[in-house]
View 1 (cartoon, rainbow, N blue to C red):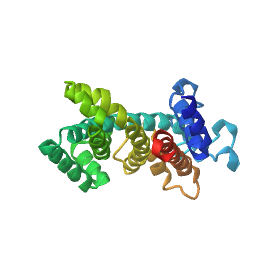
View 2: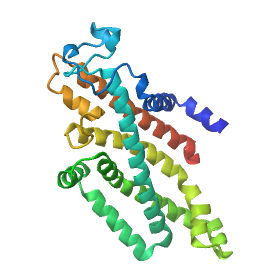
View 3: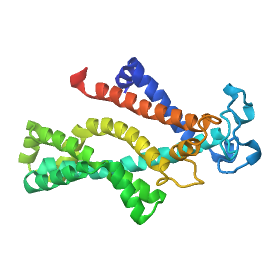
View 4: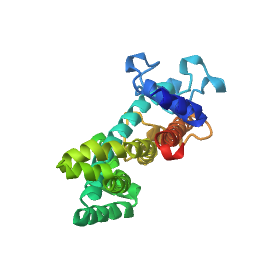
Length: 280
């Protein structure tokens, strides 16, 4: 662990990404009772107040939106929503992808062919269009959105984990363990999964960034998180009609999305270099 942290902190971009990820975690865990204002309460008397760096007051440090809602409180509350959606969706994707990828790589044959054809079908569909079509049919809710985002990302895990499983399965220690009578389940748990964990961790960080963007895009279109629940995507949608007189409405959540995506991408690059001995 000491060597791990030393290598991570040596990479400046990875260190910056780690700091931003920690800040996102702190903001996501911030109690709602400690927010400056109620993120869903409208106050027309305070509408379109500028942020403090544009001539506003510290009472609304990031300004207010077109309904007079405090942007700082909405951004913090939206962070919690976006982080929860991203983490749960990536957990669903990883569970499906790892299970199917290990099965395809370990058993091979017809199982491998069937799973890889499913991967090809999944990758052939435009994800955003597929999500919009499903939501239009079954309706929009937070559980459905999380499930769709989770299902949309399993193919990337399956392909990479399958390739790593094929590599590990051909190693001599796996053949020796199989010759000693070790069962398939024990082989997978004891030998295969620990040796593909590096790939899973790195892909997971990149997938979190992808889900942040995808969830924001769906919410921007009005098919994701529904009002009055704050979300970065819905906040940008609220500000698109006030670009000139209230540019901060869309800028604040837009900057939050950029920082979150960059942070996880920087951290993923750093983890790839640290956890893969061949890149050292």
